[in-house]
Image (cartoon, rainbow, N blue to C red):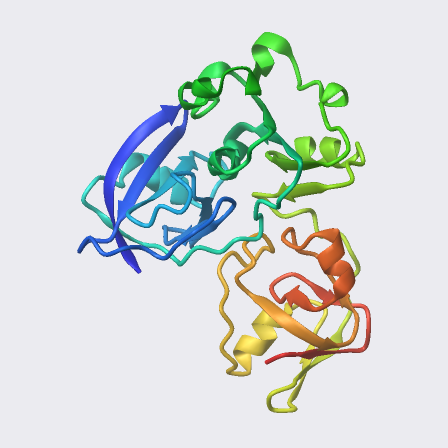
Length: 297
């Protein structure tokens, strides 16, 4: 769908917030905290977490960090995109939903605050620890001030790295973390029982790459997947339509049902429990541990 850029504002150093509406004022598809949308930009679509009011269907809000080493999309948003322009936006998808819990602990690093921001309006007993390089680089600190001592702001240049070992995660706490890879790795190493993470960048794919086959259950066709090609590429070349976006295992668009075989999950979307169930897989990056996979295609 094409949405109108109604407003663009700077919310931190190198971060702008976009407010997007339907050009005709029609309601947008509903969403819940943790959802993201794909925005069509130069260099390909990029996914951004919705950071407005939970469930608001009158407008979407996303925050865009200028990425010096990006594909040009964020630079376009910062330098060229203006109020009144139209941009292509996908329907919301949510692989980072807020689960019910006695209490929630939110840990955000830098732009990782964006998916967590709407969760604060839905959770009841919660704490947020928010770190960034500098105070001026941390988006939405003014808006977070209304929550008082529930929110801890820790700019690295003032107070050093986050004190993860001292985080208040009593039994019954669901822990949510989003931010740069080193922060996620440090939080995962703490061994929280009920941990939920969202990654903005894929994990390094240094696993072995061998050839295998995929069987398309709908037609019975069997396709060979060479070591140097993805399942998604092979299936698309065979003329089978599959929705996709990031092609790097972070957005979840190409999620496909798995009916047989043992996948080698290499995405940054599925939880450990979802991987163990082996009911779905991401075709853009994941591979196979068995000679053949049977896909629900």
